[in-house]
Image (cartoon, rainbow, N blue to C red; front, side):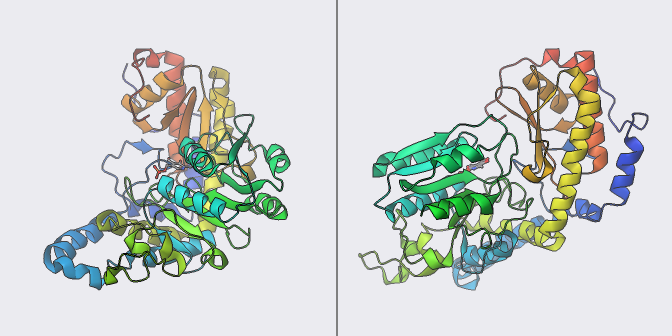
Length: 426
Ligand SMILES: Cc1ncc(COP(=O)(O)O)c(C=O)c1O
């Protein structure tokens, strides 16, 4: 079946979508990203953000001038401190100060370093607490740290959509070394009240470690005000740093000298170029360094951070709420009668910038959307189609068109041909 591409001007709500776009204060940011296919509606910016236009010239300069011409001199001309300088650019976007954020490694590696450091600093405690909405890598890493250091990991169960706040609160006690959670959870988009839960952890003397991967750049975060000890997150989602771009870690300034990284590598040494054989951790956030930074992918992070800073997280959040609320409104009217369920919180204050819709045939429908509908969401087992509504480049008309393309595909049964087994990356 061929689906007619383009918007649905005759469908209810179209005029409203056009008006919302016309009065969107962030509308001009869309042109700051590359769009090679005018028909494509990209709703996966919560997995991999779009390419910012300035990134292309930035990388060209890096490759041809800096690497090609400056060669090894580049290390003393900005590369050596790049991860610190970019960390300082990210800091105000998450309510941290310069010197508290380091861009480095992957989220998994950073989580390992910080969870290990936190637990080591609390030898009198024997439990790490998390929930079953956390991203699997977080649970694997926390479990690994717990086993390695002889603690237990308590995974508090949820209803699969909302964070189990009561269960978590009940689980926190004087045995808890660390409370580690995703701020916005990957499947349902549930978003915790970070300050309230961090305060509960503090009451019992536990440290807090938040994974900000799905909230950095889309949900306002104030790590200082929330009293957070530690945080990690990736830069390839709403920060638009590119595929596999380095992640970040945050360590509250007052804690930095008390914590030690389990990876005692040369970039975290007091004097890396003294080349002595005794490890002496350097002061400050640099002690959480590992080895040589991937400068090509690190450099690509900067233009995305600049765009988020220019737009402002509060304005991004206002549009994000408007987009996700609009999608939920249309789901209720158009898609819920066709067997689609809501797999995300209906309360906007506890929702990030993605919305999951559930359906018995979610996998083939998501494939039909991509292959014949020119809409890219993603699929999460067992039955969720996840729509990432990145506010800097998603229009209200895109949401309207997506919902009506879903309707067309579901009503016509056009998805029935897309029953191949899920690809490796879904
Ligand atoms: C919340 C969360 N944490 C961690 C990760 C994975 O991090 P990495 O692959 O950078 O280690 C993801 C990936 O999507 C994620 O959504």
